[in-house]
Length: 488
Image (cartoon, rainbow, N blue to C red):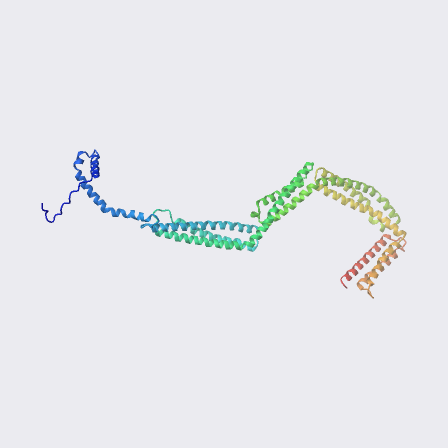
């Protein structure tokens, strides 16, 4: 047979392999029953359609394989062909966000630490430098707030966890977050520099605060000791109500001490602690001395009563003394003593009345009242004693000068001569400031001696004149020594 021209020759027949024949037969045999016989009959048609479909699949294979190939090349550390730049920008923005968050935390920590230092200085120091430090810290606080606000706005403005984040927004997020971090770091450096400048003020404040804690503790211990002392006194059946009231008045001060220097200041707290310690110590000392004080008051009550009784007896003896003075001497020698008996008796009666009041105060344990009344009694008895003694002393001195006036004269003349020798020591002529008073003293003594020649001499006047002369001479001696001490 001759082949038709232009028609390709039919390829030679190649019988299928045994394995392929068996596979085809099994495929036909295993065809689903739903197809039935028609499916078997129409197998060539189905096969034709399948061929067309397979051909189309092969044509679209390059398009479907492109993403798969890109993913394959991106894996294993190889850069993605599509979307890789956005992922890198997202990673860089996330790193910038983390860095800004760390800077924000560090700035917040630095500000809180510095605030503690500034508050310490403000509480312990009221100097202009300390007040200026507080003002400067407040200004820095505004800088911190502004930097923090910028950081928070940058974080809120960009959602780095969004799946569809593109490269442009990620780059902008990285830029803004980096700028926020840089600002946070700058403000933190300013805070650190400011903190270093506070060193001297902080050292001074801490030194004062170191004094504060022991002072407050000493005040508390003093209050506790005073309370314990009062308890011990009450155990001895002594009320000590006044001491208890004084201790109770310190309770508000203890409350203020417990509130601390942060509320009241270091200076005021130190002063308050010292005052509380001092007053509580005084209360404790008085409480501890109270049993002794009670015993002392009892002793004084007995002693002053005995003395009042003795003065009553002595007052009764004033009248005979006055009688003798009236009989032997002129009226000028005793006239000022006429009221002594009545005055002494009245003072003794008043003293006894005050003694009774002091006894009642002691029984009521009003220790301050008892002490004050006993002091009044003592003053009354002292005045009475002086008045009663004055009458006896007057009579004794008048008797002595009446018997021998020369002793009083020699005593006065010796004082004058001693002053005159002192005035002339180292000089040829005396200083008029010294000589004139001494000459007047001599003349005054001569006049006093002349009164003794009268019929009824006034011995009391004579004794007064000699005493006055000696006092004037003593003043001249003091003046001379003062001038020589000054180099005149």
